Image (cartoon, rainbow, N blue to C red; front, side, top):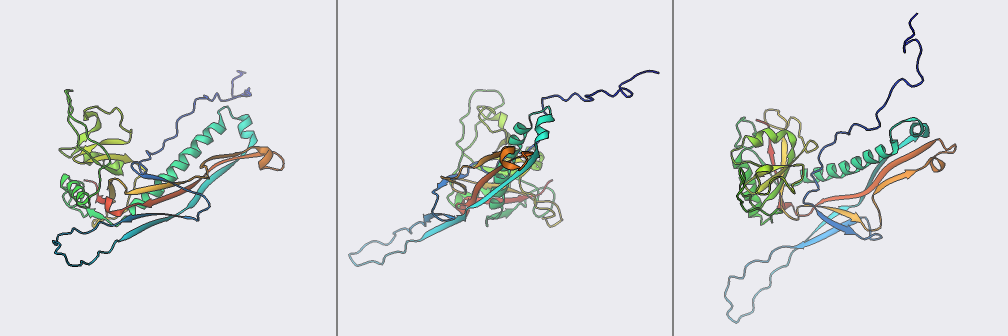
Amino acid sequence: MLNTPQTLSPQVQNWVDDVLISTNHPSHIAAIGAEESVMKSKNGDYFTRSRYEKLPLGLVPLNGQPTNGVEVKRLEVSAKVQYYGLFQAVFQNVELHNSDPVLNSLAQLNGLSMKGTEDHLLMEKMRSASGYLNATGGTNGDLSSSISEADVLEAISTLRQNDAVMLMVGEEGRSAYGTAPIFDAFIAKTHTKVIKDLYNLMNFKPKWEYPMGAAGCASSEEGSLYNTRFFLSSASTVIKNGSAQGADVYPIYIHGQEAIGKVQMDNFSAGLRYRPPVYSDPLFQNFTIGWVAALVPYLVNELNIVKLNVTLA
C-alpha cells in the first residue's frame, strides 16, 4: 500500500503565507476640499457657523438729507454632533492559532471602516444640496443625458455667477512633451463609472498631461476639464433608475471653497478602541476591537456647490 498525504494526514495541511492579500477599498474623495473646524466640548450638541449677506450698492448720490439705513442680514448654519462606531468581539484562540497578525489586520480594517463612514456621510450631505443641473448635451438622448462639455461649462458658469471661489490653483505651461497648462479649478467628485465618458470629451486632460505631470496629485484625481478637476471613487453616489429612461444617474458634485465642512471635537479623540481579554470577558476568552468617532458633516454654503446629474453614454 502506498502511503500518501491522504492516508497519513499531516499535522499541518496548509502553509499560509504571512503576507496578506490587500483588501480592496474605494478612494475616499468626499472630504477633499472640505472646511475643517474644531468644536469645543461642553458647549451643547450643535455646531453653528454664521455668515453675513452682501450689502447693496450705494448708487444714490447724497444730497445732505437723511437717508434710510439698510438691513444687515446674518445667516446661520447648524449641524448636530453624532457619534458613530462599530466593534468586533474575537475569541482569543483566533489570535493564538492564526499565523497572520489578526490584530494588525483588524486595526487596518477598522480604520477603513471609519474613513468610509465619514466619506459616505459627507457624500450624502452633498447629495442633499439644493442646487442641481440635469445634463442635456450628451449623446444618449436621456434626461439626464451623458456628460458633455457644455453641461460642465453650465455648472462652472452657475458657480461663478454665485461668486464661488475656486479651490485649486492652475499650472503654467512648460516645455515638456505632451503637456499643457491647466486652469484654476473647482473640484468635481463623481463615480468611477463616468471615466469612459470623460475620456471621450475633446478637451478633457488626464493628469499625466499636467505641466508637472501626476506628481503631487492624489491617486483619485483623474484629470481636468476647463475650470474643474475630477476626482473619482467607486463609493460615490448612484441614483438607481433615476433618469427619464430608467438609467442609473451619477451626480457630479462640483464645488468651490466653503461648500462642505466637517467638525472635530476638541476633547474627543476619534480612533481605535481595543480591550484585551482580561477586560472584555469573565473567563478572559475574548478581546474586542473597534472604532468610534464624532462625525459632523454639513453644508457650509449651498451657493458654492452644484450637482450635475449625468447618465452613461
